[in-house]
Amino acid sequence: MTQSKDQLTAEAIALLKQLIQTESFSRNEGNVSDWMEAYLCSKDQVVERFNNNIWTWAAKPDPAKPTILLNSHLDTVRPSDKWQYDPFGALEEEDRLIGLGSNDAGGPLVALMAAFFLLKEKEQPFNLVFAATAEEEISGPKGVASILDRLGKIDLAIVGEPTRMQMAIAEKGLMVLDCEAHGKTGHAARDEGVNAIYEALDDIQWFKTFSFPKISPHLGPVKMTVTQVEAGSQHNVVPDVCKFVVDVRLNEHYSNETCFEIIRQHVKCDVKPRSFRLNSSSIGLNHPVVKRGLERGISYYGSPTTSDQAVMDFTTLKMGPGDSARSHTPDEFIYLSEIEEGVSTYFEMLDGLVISD
Image 1: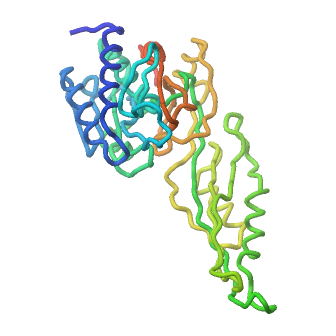
Image 2 (image 1 turned 90 degrees about the horizontal axis):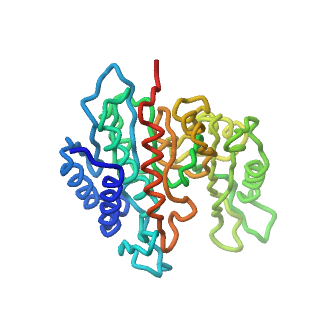
Image 3 (image 1 turned 30 degrees about the vertical axis):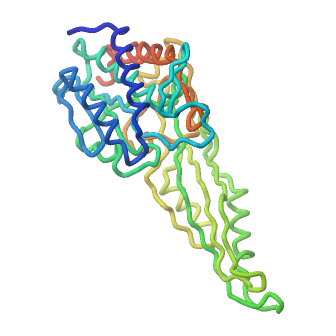
């Protein structure tokens, strides 16, 4: 049965309220996955599931067509004790829907879902798959990365995150480094030992002042910040080890591996990356989906925050209703009108889109 945009949007908002009312912290998304699976099955969709990840195809994939993935996440962070409203209340006040995960990323999730059903009403020049996935907030191994091989080749993904429906055409990567400088223990009262804190200072200064030469027009320079330092056991002992942590935010000109090699060549401390998984990403202004957005007067920007784009090694565009400034904040909310706009904009940007010759 064909449904109108208004009907699908109303159903999406009703589902969002159910999702808000169901605890869905990272690694514990099972109950919200059940809700999503049940809804999709009620629409006569063939639903596939792996752990707490849910996906469904608009039609049997045609190998001659490119494939577009619509993806957002089911999980939320934990609420702080600063909430004035019930985080799981899904309270509607005029145009606002208040609740944990309403903005990040329940609104984008259900808007993509409604757009999926609108797009599948007619044959498109692409295969279309919708995926609601887990563990985004912790970049966990059982999230979207765990199902990409099951989806096959993806030519474009729309990643639903709150961007005020602006196009985030680039996103910073993230690499966390554990560094360790070494010295020699001695008594602080005597001129002996090698102070590992002093040994670390030169490297810390390098992290503070070094500039990577390639600067992004959308993301700016690579940014390195020393965020934690640990050394010493007592006041009268010269420490032989100084440990510190560096937060590295990369632009699209550098892979995590390349950036790490440059760092390792410049510092004398031991440096170990926690992961190379979360790389930067970008999409060209001449890409068909971006061009269509520009034709509709939609603005674009570079995003400093990471998302599931970081684990996707294909072309992606981050875009969704809501505002990133509301994410992870007490009394998080989304405007219902933002969801309505999101459904319309997603549909208009993708309907009939040709992304390959």
